[in-house]
Amino acid sequence: MVYTITLNPALDYVMKVGTLRYDDINRSQSENLYYGGKGINVSVILTRLGIGNKALGFTAGFSGQKLEAMLRADGIDCDFIRLGRGFTRINVKIKADTELDINAQGPDISEEEISGLLQKLDGIGEGDYLVLAGSIPKTLPSDVYERILERLSGRGIRFVVDATGDLLMKVLKYRPFLIKPNHHELGDLFGVKTTTEEEIEHYARLLQQKGAGNVLVSRSKDGALLLDETGRVHKIGVVKGKLVNSVGSGDSMVAGFVAGYIGSRDYSHALRLGSACGNATAFSEALAERKLIDELFDRLMVE
Image: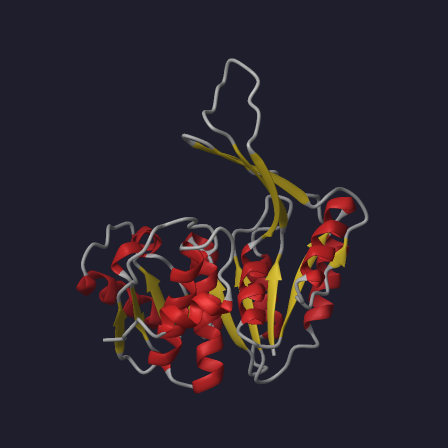
């Protein structure tokens, strides 16, 4: 079983506008409402790939109720802790001749409610996967990821961490099964710029020395590089196509990799499926559907 945690989920209200004006009223051409949050994105793709999973985290207010209803309507199994006050955030995304994103802060979360999440996680056991994805909202203590991994360490759980900066570096001591920085984030961890495959491999190995198992580095138009836990390097390109939406591509790659590994126990296969999921989401208005994932999987090859 795979469990995902989204500490600060959101509803994304997306409006398309012809030309954005700052000195007059703007009128939208269309509006759509989507659920969002990196862990939720992972759960959606896992569900579409037929992998059993449960989305965990916090929701609040009428917007939280709407988010949970939308997830369940799409067949996503979720078990969120309902907060006693505030609202699940609603982010506003304006797509025009330029793009404007306004992300809300989210509700306050008490120490008691954090404890409730930790107690819920005690039900995870050997052979399960736990995906921690995204930044920590300002309403939570900065060590919450460390507290989660410390509590669950030693139980045979495979941890997957998609985070940046100190948030990632501080959990390496718990030996996560998979981490997924992009090549910019990888360089930022060491105060350098990584431009070549050799540089990416070098710094990925440094992360392994600090405790990471598998290091998956996404490289945008240059594909991805995986340094697996045996020390072997796998590389894959991308499928050429029109970029429609980059939001959720990295989360889709994480989901595809986990699903691919669960189904095959083969790292090359996992990388191929992860890349197919990431590419498929990039070519879609929202998160990728299974049909396109399967089509792109057939067109990708691992080196």
